[in-house]
Length: 238
Image 1 (cartoon, rainbow, N blue to C red):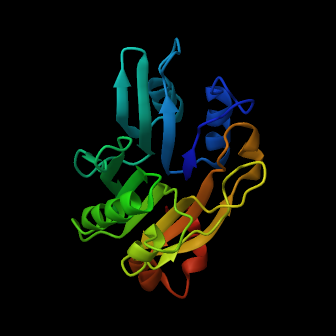
Image 2: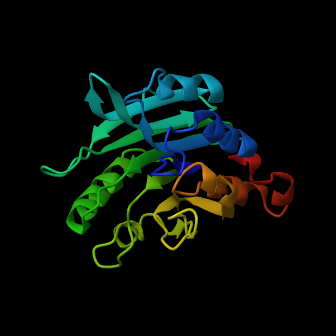
């Protein structure tokens, strides 16, 4: 699952953590990337609350750190890391700080590289950040997914164009704005995996201005080894 949990104006202005956690737990994802986690001006620490509620293994990437709190993203996995995850600074010049989390996850079906990110708002910024995502994806021989909020809605110098050769499969659900989704900002890209089933959860529109995007995936080497009896595996493999 990938989900930008930010609320705006009258839409969840106080960041209803309990509601966000309930949405995530409803789908019980083995791997979830969350963007726009904001502890500024709060009495609690959303990073810690999410980690405690969702369990497993987690890493936070705080792109903004202030005396009033922090702002950033998280990657949470039910399965352990192969090695400590990397938090990569992919900020572009003087624009808003951006991070990518790169983790090798030890799944029951072998290693999986997962990159979780939240890209910038300008075309040139996103294009340069996409090149860095490709480098991170190439650092291991594992199947890989890249998930997050890509802020990507133009084809010219688009992220999906830059990632297309390395990541031939992707989700294509309209996720923003959540009340009337028009843009496919939130995506899951896959390399050496099959997207068995994908969808966006419209019930989350009262929590965030983005809809969560969920994908059941299966690594291609599992499919190749199991055919023709793959039906018994279900997408719960990942």
